[in-house]
Image 1 (cartoon, one colour):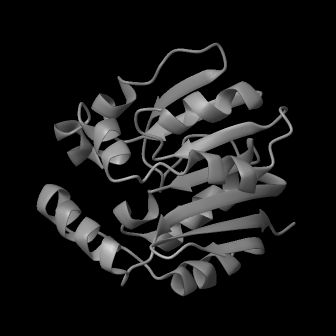
Image 2 (cartoon, rainbow, N blue to C red):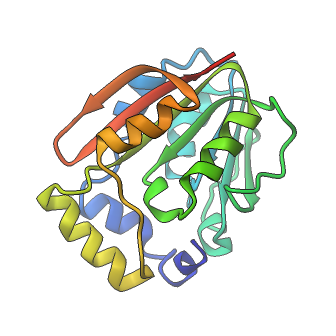
Length: 189
C-alpha cells in the first residue's frame, strides 16, 4: 500500500467521483453502541473515521502509507498508526471492531491478514469487510485503474471472501450490492 503515497492528495476526490464511499451502509451494518475500540485496517485518509469516530470510544486508523495518514483529521479519539496489516503491532484482544473497507484487494496474503485481525479482536469482536465483486463490470474498470496505479491486486468474489471469513469468524451479515459486498463476522470464541 506504500504506492498510495503517490496518490494520497487525490484519493478522497476519486472515492467521491466514483461513488465508492459507503460510510452510511458501513455504519448501519456495524450498529455501533459508542463504547467500542475500532481498528480501521487500511483506513487511509481517515474519511471513514471522520464519520464513525464520534460514535466510538477510540478509533485507530492503520495504514502503510504515510501520505494517506497525513490527511487524517485530528480528533481526541482518533489515532493514525503507520503499520502492516499482516503484522499488527497491537496486543492480543485489543479491539471490539475491525473494519476493512476497500482494503483486502490490496493485500497479498489474505490468510495472514485474517489471522492478525482475529488475534487483535476481543471475544465476540466484529469484523466488517466492504470490498468489490471481482467479476462485476464496474469492478473490472476499477481493477484496470488500480493495476495501472499500483500493479497487482488481489480481488475476490463475495463468495470467496465469505469462505475465507468463515475460517475465522461466524458470519452475522452478508450483503451483496451488485459491484460490492459487505460481510460482517463475529470472532469465534
